Each structure stands twice: as structure tokens, then as C-alpha cells.
Length: 258
Ligand code: COA
Image (cartoon, rainbow, N blue to C red; front, side, top):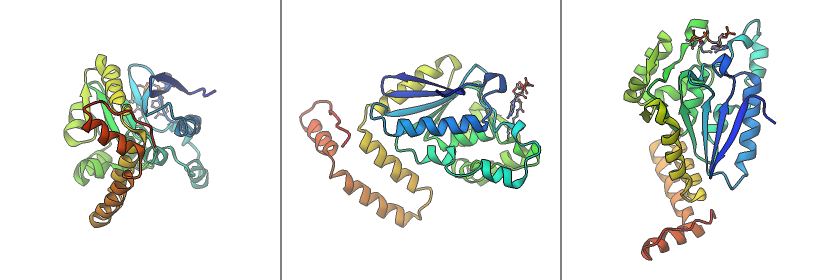
């Protein structure tokens, strides 16, 4: 049983809550290991369509890596702690959609974890930042790569070089989060979004995510070719037959996931 993460189910949605509120849900080795273990189980659980990640308590989503673990560490210790598979990469390539439900401080590794998710929905009270510069380090969970892809190099430079925090409204304005809602509506709005996505064909969701993730690494011509191949692959699925047939018969589709 995981000790640092609560796992809940709401229909086809799995909600994973990092549960270290006294440490503002900082990511230590145990959280990262348990997250990988839980995700490995969910990957093959057909009853889960969408994963939601959040933090326990009112104050914080994740306030970054656990700074206590950095003290006295050698480069070799740190390299070992950062060995693959890394939770950031597993989330980005996870075959089911992952939504970050950002309830408060979203800093450092927390912001990097949110950026590894597919969609970010935040409370108006959330605050975002990459404060590593203040510790004499740089982001190490993909922040220097994923942040500029989301917000552009200029805003990424500003956030990473100053270490400043920004409010949820500004995070939305620059593209770091997609949706901002009042704190009291965060869970309901997140579940509404998650349930809507979870009602689609799991197979088609997986293929759509794969195509979208490819856009982060492929030149446009290769990406368009890859999309065409994945589009044609959809034509081998029972769900494509069912989706088209249901539309023509004016009824809701019944997905098989194959
Ligand atoms: N790692 C380890 N512990 C952390 C933590 C982190 N990233 N962030 C917060 N905590 C701990 C604090 O040490 C404190 O623990 P204590 O009560 O045992 O002393 C507890 O969480 C509450 O934090 P506190 O600093 O008292 O809350 P605050 O409201 O005054 O400030 C923050 C909130 C987020 C501004 C502040 O905690 C902070 O700057 N955290 C570090 C953020 C950071 O640099 N993240 C990147 C890490 S690479």
C-alpha cells in the first residue's frame, strides 16, 4: 500500500493525491517511487480511462522536489536519484490522459510534474514558479524544456532566471495552465472534464495523445506524416466502425476500446 499517495476512484477516473501536506506535498524519493508503481498498475487497468493528479490540503499542489534530500548529495547520488524511469517522462508518455488538478503552490518539480500532464486545471489561489535558481540549481525535471514549449522562451527565461512566482490568472494568460476556476469548484470542474474525456474510446484517446506528443519532438513534415499513419491506423479499430455507424444511426457510440 502506498504511504504517500491516496488513490481514489470516481467512475472511470482515478484520482491520485500526493499526501504530505505538512511538507506542502514536496516530491521525495518515496513519492516518486510510489507514483511510478501506481501508474504501472493503472496502465493495464481497463476500468481507468483518465488519471487526475493533485496535492492534499488547501495550500499546495506540490512545492517542488524535497529540498531536504539535496543537502550533502554528490553528483553521483543525484544522478542515481534521477535514474530512469522518471515520473515526469512516464506521465508525458502515459497511454491514458493525465490531468493536473492544481490546488495551490505549484513550484519547481511540482510545476514540472504539472507540465508533464496533458491538461492543467488550477484554482484561482494556485501559484506557479520555478524557484530552483534561489537554491543554486536549475530545473531538473524537464522545466527548461517543457516550460518554453508551453509559454515561449521569453516567459520561460523570466520565470527560471528570476525564480519569481506568478498567480493563476497570469499562468493562464501565458499558457502555463489551460483552465482556472474558483477554489471551491476545482474538484467538480476537474471531474467534469475528466469524465467527459473518459467517456471517449480509450484506444482513440491513446492514439490522439501519441500524435500530440509527437508534435513536441518531430519536425512538422514528419509529424504530419506520422499523424496520417496514426489516422489510418484508427481505420483498423472496432471503435472507428462503431463511432461512424453510431453517428449515421443518430445514437451514442458504445466504445469497445479496440
Ligand atoms: N522541500 C521540502 N520541504 C518543503 C518544501 C520543499 N520543496 N517546501 C515546503 N517545505 C516544508 C517547509 O520546510 C515547512 O516544513 P516545516 O514545517 O517542517 O519547517 C513546510 O513545508 C511548510 O512550508 P513553509 O515554508 O513554512 O510555508 P510558507 O507558507 O511559509 O511558504 C513556500 C511556502 C512554498 C513559499 C515555501 O515553503 C517555499 O519556498 N518552498 C520551497 C519551494 C522551492 O524552492 N521549490 C523548488 C525545490 S527544487
